Each structure stands twice: as C-alpha cells, then as structure tokens.
Amino acid sequence: MKTNFKPLTKAEEEIMQVLWRLEQAFVKDIVDELPDPKPHYNTISTIIKILVDKGIVASESFGKSNRYYPLVKKDEYTKKTMKQFLKGYFNGSYANMLSFFAKEKDISIEELESILKELKNDKPKK
Image 1 (cartoon, one colour):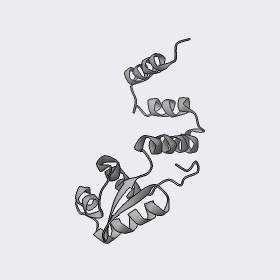
Image 2 (image 1 turned 60 degrees about the vertical axis):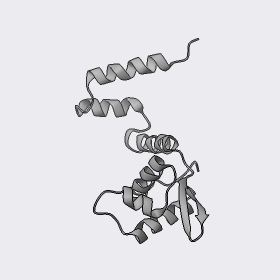
Image 3 (image 1 turned 30 degrees about the vertical axis):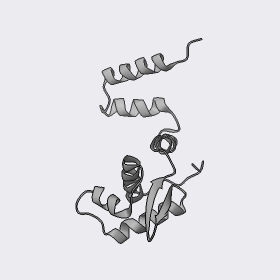
Image 4 (image 1 turned 120 degrees about the horizontal axis):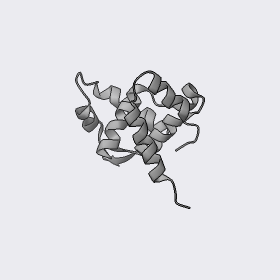
C-alpha cells in the first residue's frame, strides 16, 4: 500500500468492507451485499473504478465482466488509518487516546486492565 494514501470516502470504505469479506466479487455481488436501499449498479461501478485508480483494487476480466479483488489487506488499511486518526486527533499518542475514552466513560477500568494484560503478554521475552 502507498505510504501516503488518501483515506477512503465512506462509500469507498463500504465497498472495501464487502470486497474484504468476499475476497473477490463482480459489481452485482457487491450490490447484493449492501444494505437496503441498495445503491444503483452504476454508482457501485463508478466507486470501484475510483478504487482501481487509487491502486487499492484490481480486476480480472471475464468477457465483458470484471471480477474485482482487493490489493490492500484489511488489517493493513486499518493499521494505516488508525495511525492517521491517532496522529490527527491525539497528537500520535495512544495514552492521549485511552485517556480521552476513559474520561468519556467509553472504556472501563476492566477494559484498560485487559489491554495492559494483553500488552504484557505480547512483549517479547528477553
């Protein structure tokens, strides 16, 4: 993935969520997976072409139809997006982000303790 990618729009991200779940799909398959009211086929086709132009999606031709698949893994996109979010809203500090959620009561002491326990277990042994 490009290191300085532009974040996806809400519509582009919605399409990517479907592609990540299906791993590959024709436009019709993507439309079928979207919630009602379903967007028009041409709308989805246009968004996919934008994703192809951004280098996030590629296609395989089957006659006049194209099957699309993601070039970027979901966890890779999530990691990059979260780093940008953290930088933009919390000065790049995880402590600032956790503090914010703790103050807003969106995260409990038990959840924070669970996070600390996970971090301690993930640290490499010396």
